[in-house]
Structure formats: C-alpha cells, structure tokens
Length: 128
Length: 487
Image (cartoon, rainbow over all chains, first blue to last red; front, top):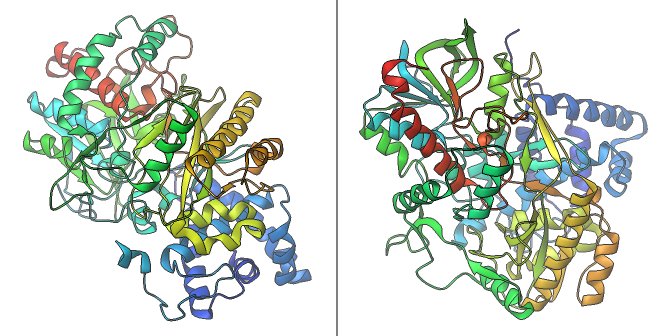
C-alpha cells in the first residue's frame, strides 16, 4: 500500500469557536475569525496518525455539542481536564493563544485589544 | 539547486544523501569534495538563513514539520519539533554549541562496544567543526533574560556558563547570523559539485538481493519518481530516518530506542521589561548536569501565553505584562524510552514516548529548582507550566509547587531527539547500525544523523551529530568503499 497523507478536515470548528469565546470573550469577531482560520490551517497538517486521533476526539466532542450545546461543552471542557479530551482542548488552546498574542501582543487577558486599533497588524514585528 | 516544485527529470547518483541537516550536509560536502557524484534530496524548501523571524509562527509555517505541531504520544504526551527545510534543525534551533563531554564518549565506547570510537579523534573533528561554523561567544553583553539565569545561578553558587554559538557577528547583523547548514556545509557541497533537490520526499527504499536498488520519492507536485544510486546515506533525522527504513522493510532494532531530553517550563516575571522576542538566552546552568540542566527559551508573547495556558484561570491576567516576562526550561536526561513506528497506509510515523517514575520526579525537582533560581535572580513571580500550579513568590511556594507537580498535568516538550538507529559494536544486541552507521543486512545503505547516537548526550546534540557524521564519512572514503564499490 502506498502511504498517503491524511489531509481531511478535523471537525473542530464549532467547538473551537466556543472554546475561544469561553477563553477570550473580548476577542473581536474579526480577530476570532482569523484565529479560527489559523487553528484550522494547523489542524489540516497534523501528522497523519495524529489526524486520526484528534479527528476522533473532535467528532465525539462535536456530537456531544450538537446534543447539549457547543457553548456548554466548551464551558465544561475548558475547565475540567478529562482524560483524552484534555489533550484536544490543550491543542486548540495552544494554537489559539500562540496566534493571538504573537499577532496582537497588545491583547488583554479576556482577548480584548488594549490599544483597540491594531487589527491585522503585527506589533511584534514593529518592535524588532 | 532547483526551486521546490520543479522536478529535474531522471535522477541518479553515485551517492544519494537523503536529508540536508547537521548529518546530511557535512556528509554531502565531504563526499563531493572527494570527487564523488553526490545528490542530496530534501523534503522541505530551501529558505535562506535570516529570511524568517526566528521562533515565529511564520518560521514554523515554512521550516518545521507539520508547522510545529508534532507529538510523541504517552502519559504525558510530549511535544517535539523537527526541522523540515534545507539545513534541517540547524536552521531553526538555538545555535547553542556544546562539545560532547569526554566522559560521554568514553562511556559510549565502553558501554556499547564501540571499539573504534576515539574521543581524541572526535575532539580534533570538533576543532574543525568549530572553525567551519564560527563557533564563538557573544561579542557584547548578554540579553536581559540570559543575565537573569547568570544572576540566579551566581546567587545560589550553582555552576553556570555562557554557551558559545555557531554565529557570526557584524555591524550589519549585530544580533548575529546563524551559521547553519545553508550558510556552511551545503554551499560547500554545491561548490564541490553536489546537486541539491529540495521539495522531494523519500517514500521508501526498494531493496533486492541485499542491496538498495532505488528510492521512490514524491516530488512537491505529488508525482512519484525513482532515483537510482550506488550508495545510499539516510540523514533524515531521528524520526524520519527510522520511519523510512521501517517503511522499506528494514526493521532490526530500528525505531525502538528513541531518546530525548524531556523539558518542562515556567514563565518568570521581573520588575522591569526583559523580554526578547526573537532570540534565546546564551547562559545555561549545569550544576546538576547531565541529569538536569536549566536554560532560557524563545519568549515572544505568543510563547509566554502558551506557558501560562495550563493554569490560565489563575495566570492568564499576567499576560498583559509579557514584556516583563521570559520563559525558562528545565531539561532532564531521561531513563524512559520511545518508539517510532511506521503504520501501513500512513505518511507519517507514530511516535510514542514513556517517561519513567524517576523521570517524572526529576522533572518536578527540576522545575522547583528552576523556580528557586528565578526567585534568586529577582523574579517577582514565577508561573510553572502545569495545571493547578501555584504562583511562586517565595521559597515556601517552591515547596508547594513541587508538592503539586505531576508530569501528566505538565506541558512537556523536547527539541532533542536521537538514538532511533543506534550504533553499536558487534556484541551490542540493541544496535541498529554498525560502528560506522552501516545498516546490517543491506550492503549499500548507511545512516549518518542523530539517529546514530547511542543514547541522549545530555547537551545540545548538534556538535556530536556533526562530529560522528564527519568521522563516518571519512571512514567510508578511506576504505574506498564508494569509489571501488566494495561494501
């Protein structure tokens, strides 16, 4: 069998969005959109065995969200480190936080912009 | 060299080198300079040193495997990084240079039956490497995060030192220019006639009658091609080298002995701005080496946020102070072990790693000592990177931190991977390659990268990898192995 890369989208969208809303409620819609796009782009290129594992957990969490609500699931999983799922939450959170604060270092703890006028600009780049 | 994406037509070579990092680049340079027809294939792109901001997401996008999201599964899972570009890990690492300690080489020689491993010979090769890479100390003063490490260690009376780097410094580039493989050995290989093809992934080796016949490669566009050769040297790094051998049916002691330096982190907040977004400290603390070492990590605000993320409820409000913060690590030599497995139907290998109880305890002790070091350096607060960690302000908080620590709650990572095809003497039952990197059972295949290290060296392994690679290539040349076809 010829090895092939698994490059299927991981169904993280709704949960990732709600987790981001839960962690960083002050993040603007535009920044949230960019952050989620970044997260999805990284999930698309995970090593193929990871894609299977993360994809399975994402489907499970997604299914749970469709039953009891994604916001509720994000609220619970955002606080509780359940086995297996905690690595998924950590992965999404790590990608989001790294992107938000590298792209907009003037972000407050709740995700709001301290200077409120730098959407899309990399302040880190200007600091060099 | 050709741009990624253009397939140069039928390719064959006297020697095919797979991978262009710290093992592959010197291998290619020395063979080409000896007059051999050398072809180097590299999965990633060729990106000139300095084109991307160090340690940034942009760099991860272009020069890291899977854009930096790679994990060895286990309890806890351990995040690791691999370079995926011309020059490999040398393009993206800290550039901090450590000679292998003489006691390490002696131990390897005695423990693994490496009769031909001559510490004096390695020493003289390292002299050459240091000249070729311009290894030197910083010409000016160290950065503030580096100074904090020095200050804390000095206050505690712990052994510490500035680590030299493979860097050149000039008025145009006062922060230094990393003397990575794209700056040194790869241009040298090209000058001697070697061809380098980036954007070309080795899928498997076709083997028949005890010899490798060709390598099936996937070009950037997805097309498959075959490359023929007389000799094959695999230098794809400690994960991809065993993965390729396993996919090709070479399994004996391959991928079973992955060794790493597990690392835990913390962020320390000081009373004035110290953050440096695009460099790492040059001081390291080796009081408890080789079991335990302390140093500084890249600390752009995204990475500071990551270091706080495990206890975001408690630490998150400090992120607005990122300019006064820097990230530090405690690294251990592990007694655990990992595996690299090739799974049929999957492009990428499955990597696993299991820490021992001793490893977990050592990580906890290491992180506690690192917190103490930071307090002595003047940190107002320390934020250890594990769930339910306390904010550390005093020595008594350090004791509480150690009490609460659990490796399964921590963010554990590593940047040093090795020993997946370990060299060994004839009597060494775990050896994946002979003393010089040749793979038993197939006459014209050798490995020449970090995979060969018998175990984790306890220091940044690049110098050790390069020295062993140069030693092995010279041995092959001296034996006229390639030129005469003798195997």
